[in-house]
Length: 369
Image 1 (cartoon, rainbow, N blue to C red):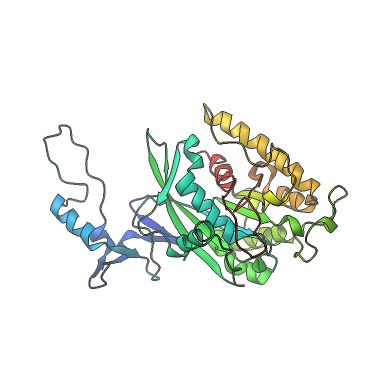
Image 2 (image 1 turned 30 degrees about the vertical axis):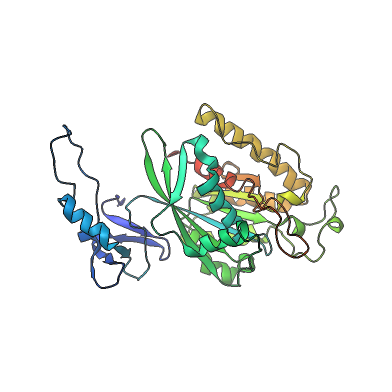
């Protein structure tokens, strides 16, 4: 049976759905605990006349609602995971990649773009903090863009997240809210079947997956040989996508191309490469109609695909298309900082470039956006 907003809530860490009646809420001071349904604030009914007062949908008075807000209740699923204090639908996006593909930097750049630069405003999409935002992600953003320092590599076996934000679609009109959730998976885990099985459960229900590819690890190509890049970089090949596809099918029983799950293959560290102007920086996301923007995204994806092939990534492209289906696969070029670190390991003036493009590609591939 299809679950409705009023029946259940999604926990990304379980992952899975839980009945609202089974969710507990704790006050911020930790002194009180009660069923979430008792302190869940629902929207007030619309009033026909401004001077006629009617109770909210939950039957609480304004004073009672104010007291609930003051206690800052936090809901927890039956397995003890803190979840968003909202019944809005959840949209999960997983970020994976080979070693040194700058996944953690990319996520920090993505959040910096979405929150502060708001590149999705042209799509009438706004992203904002959801309650108490993740202190881990805030610390990453501060390290890179304020302190101008590199982040340490994600430890093997560590899955970062969930990092949750509120996404409002239809800004200024008929607005709808979603909870946008990201996961960060260590690169070492992406080519091992055993380790992949551990993290796939976090993204098998995702609306989309972003695969970051380190250009330094691409195989030799006739036009751009490996000798011009960092020789010691771990190799990037189709094993990432082949393994991901195999585990998703093992867990769900369905091939990825039958699951309506978008995949974006994104060339990381694009600032290091002599890319064409049509690829990097990416075009602004604006247009008079969604159809125009979808056309722009399709054209952009096509030129990025060719750039990845020219850099030696034909095997990765072939795997993505064959495993996930051509209609669900897109390509992009991103840079978490817009520059490489200086000799001392610090950044000069870091700025993310194009980090939100894969998210836009995933969202615009869906009928509900």
